[in-house]
Length: 168
Image (cartoon, rainbow, N blue to C red):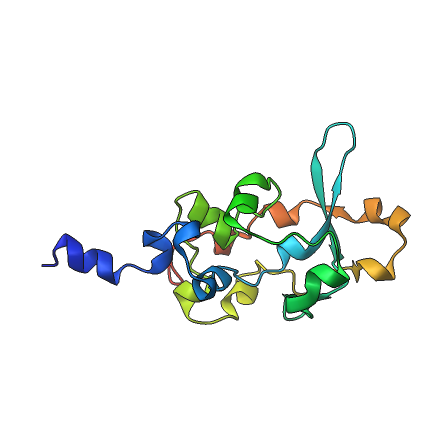
């Protein structure tokens, strides 16, 4: 039988630390690599409602679902949002599956998150990532066409992605 101290020591960092307590490696590892936050979002000027599109940021590698220039992304894309504990709390558009959002809300990571599965491909296998779902990158379409690309799937999870374990 384990005492409370042993159980706490064995718990993964995302269950025991707040976002502020994480070191930079832990923080960066919370990103599940889905690419959903790298989709262009439109905001209604009157209601401030946010709508996702299936258009990727100009720096999105839509196969690997990663930024092609992560270190310098904000120089190339000035409206790229740098996630911090404060922005995670403030942004209403982070996908419900986002590791940062889940930890902030006191919830656990899904089975397909690489920190749980041990494999960065499970986010794609579970159908959570944007792989194969990006219609175009933002620099490939005129701005007036963006409204024709509004989608709801980034705010939902595929059925198999919500189960708690890979087997169950």
